[in-house]
Image (tube, rainbow, N blue to C red; front, side, top):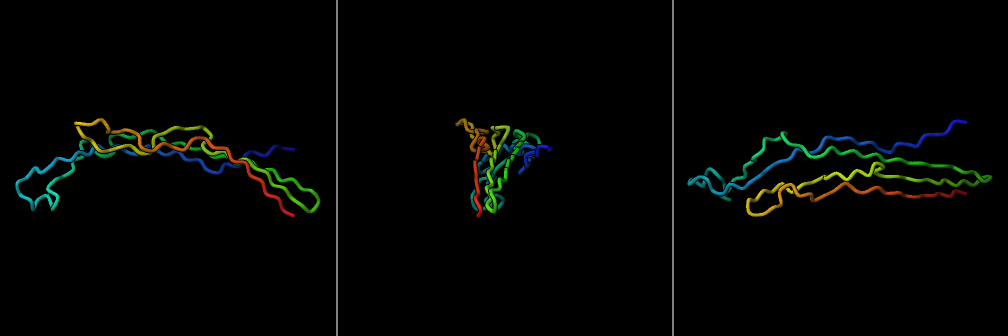
Length: 123
């Protein structure tokens, strides 16, 4: 009898998000009609698509076994999320300020590896 392979729930392999370097330039023009109502503009100091974050890879697996007891059935399973335990930064702080160190500080990480046991009993 051949062994069954685990069911692959999902496989994700995406390139990292491109990193922006926004800076508020303040009121650069004496003409308020050119800048709108705020009087400040935001300038991107890095060309879009030039710098990227880490690649995001996630693999989720599911193992299930069905046991029969006469007319009754027990389904036992194990789900594993983020099998490779990838600890990639998903969101960065894109706000740049020359007076504070916060640019490119991680704000959101990928969830850690998680194991989930499940069972279903039918009669």
